[in-house]
Length: 198
Image 1 (cartoon, rainbow, N blue to C red):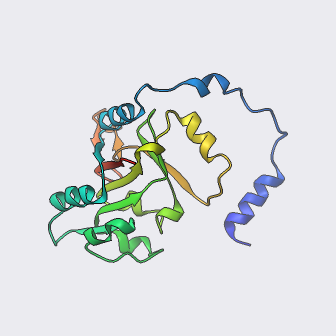
Image 2: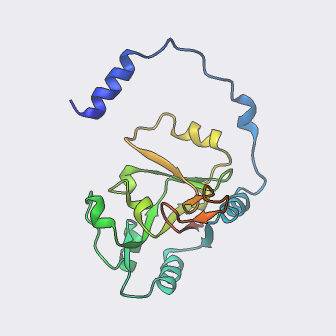
């Protein structure tokens, strides 16, 4: 039995009496007139960048223009963009092998307009450190996959099976030091989301 399984078994053995879930019905009706515009506004406000694109070639062009140096390591976990990667990606590498990654390109399951986040699970990454250890992060989502709120996001993932998942919103940031906002303090310095039109 793994450490994870032991911990989960101990938690399950000592769980408190079940209580009814809170009523979220009022929140289910919150929505945005233009969910794409809301997503773009929120993500850019928190320091991210958004590109609405029609095809993979447009993404390829943007990435190549920004990261055209052969001296930087670009990883693509998106099969359609393998040709922009400057090094091959080994599934489940040690985190130390990812230390010099300049740009990671990943797919995300969907985006959330309320907070500008994307939802990713380990099946898309190969290693959990990928979106956090790189200097810059790019994610690709489908325009039709963006949901309005976190309530709708949790309704979508509530019954899903996954070992690990995270909502990622914008570049790493902190304002703990002298109350001054610093981007990239403990993770990617930038985050770009490519919204691929259906």
